[in-house]
Length: 190
Ligand SMILES: Nc1ncnc2c1ncn2[C@@H]1O[C@H](COP(=O)(O)OP(=O)(O)OP(=O)(O)O)[C@@H](O)[C@H]1O
Ligand SMILES: Nc1nc2c(ncn2[C@@H]2O[C@H](COP(=O)(O)O)[C@@H](O)[C@H]2O)c(=O)[nH]1
Image (spheres, rainbow, N blue to C red):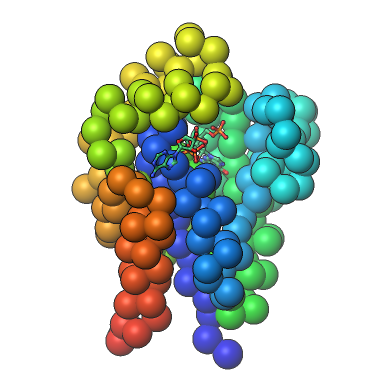
């Protein structure tokens, strides 16, 4: 059996990564979603083991020290990381896996898995990005400002990715990502 594809989806906070990932899960049967660990406090409605594995700082440090994370990064005051075993087991089983992670982590994954598919999700404009992150209503104004300032630096790193997809409409963005994955499965690899 051939291994699955490792797909990394990055983009600034509020661009719609989570929304697009949820929509893709209903459309792509062979696609598995990687659930990250984080020290961030859960938002209203978020469930442990579904949206994230919510960890204390000690628990997260233990995962780092025991090499249980494929990558991790500090982002706007919290730690986020990808549990390694689940990714490796999913790829071995022949399924594709999608990691919804920020840019520092994505670049670390690229070093370890250069054969991965790196997709950057872009907003139609910075004003629209601001409207989306504010409209979501989950962050304080200070956190929104911090995330938006980081967003400008993140967008400047789009050149490190294989594909840039504009999330102007959820369905259209999903179709572009589905097309990329279909094409990557057809690729002749040396
Ligand atoms: N194409 C779109 N058009 C309009 N609104 C959108 C679109 N995609 C997502 N949204 C909205 O934008 C907001 C942010 O989306 P989402 O939470 O998926 O972003 P994110 O990139 O996962 O953010 P974060 O990195 O902070 O977790 C949500 O309220 C979502 O409903
Ligand atoms: N490097 C990693 N980044 C991750 C991971 N899981 C999520 N993220 C990214 O963090 C920010 C903030 O997320 P939020 O849920 O607090 O809005 C966002 O860009 C996520 O994609 C991870 O495992 N590693």
